[in-house]
Image 1: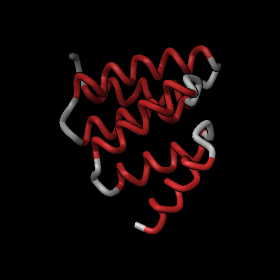
Image 2: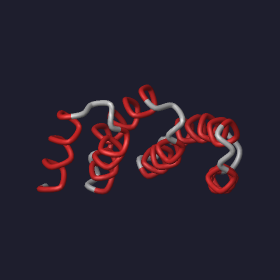
Image 3: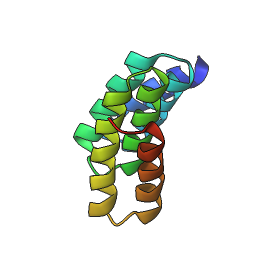
Image 4: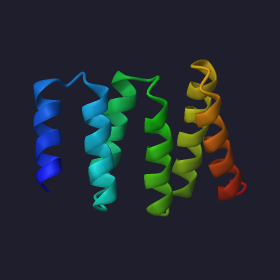
Length: 104
């Protein structure tokens, strides 16, 4: 958990740094710490609502946890963000994932 400790220190030192918070969320997600990951993603997206990758990775975390309805909502929010920020690649990835999740 050395990486987690480093990232926690980075976030503590600069709570407004979206990259460090995203990294911490990803580390928690990879370790199966779903609630910790989702908490960091929520803070990231509240502070940096245009951080498009946060929506996609939060949706993946939710889907792995079997929380498909929440994943769909996150993808809808992420697609809106990607549209707003003109990130067509992220938009296409999220639309593909949304389609793969099936109708809700």
